Image (cartoon, rainbow, N blue to C red; front, side, top):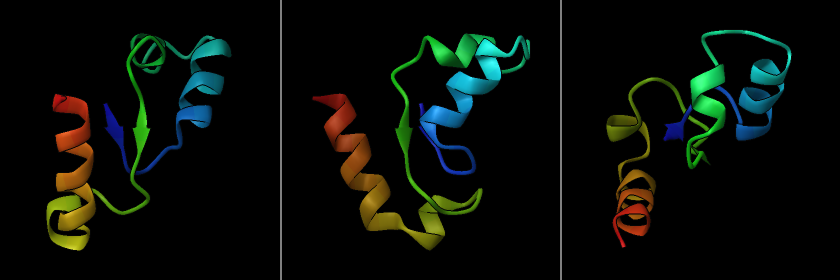
Length: 56
């Protein structure tokens, strides 16, 4: 999962605190791309690089 709003550490912390929304996410391969909800517009090169890295 590429998280743009929360860092992987924040996702794990929220999951560990019992938040049911974040619990399934904590088990995922989390990547962070600090941007808004539209990384394909705000950071397209970085997004493509992360997707390429994940696909390998």
